[in-house]
Length: 166
Image (cartoon, rainbow, N blue to C red):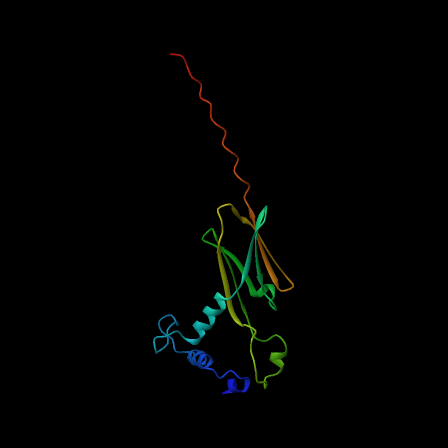
């Protein structure tokens, strides 16, 4: 096992390696369960990738800003949508390749730390978010989605009722 070469031969690492050795293609009804009743490797990988997409959410005076690191991604790899009127969804897929990896077909990875695969984050927008005024900019590997706030409602003026003499 190559993990012994890097000093990773611990009981915890052995257990993790065993969990990750679920073969692809063993799929149940929705491709989520393998023949042993556990999740398939692809499902576990995708779920982990979706859960580990960190984001910062800022409440600015006139808008909300959602900031997500997207290193190495083109804007065509990122999708920003609003579902069900108030659910902001940021999703996409990071693929291996696009550079040295494709040129070196005979290379053997000693370590793969850069996360590849699908990513997704969902945010429920507050009631004062203007879903018609959303912009997204990806610069230097950082995606910033800005959702403008609706203007605050004007305070209701008391209604004066004329009192009639009967």
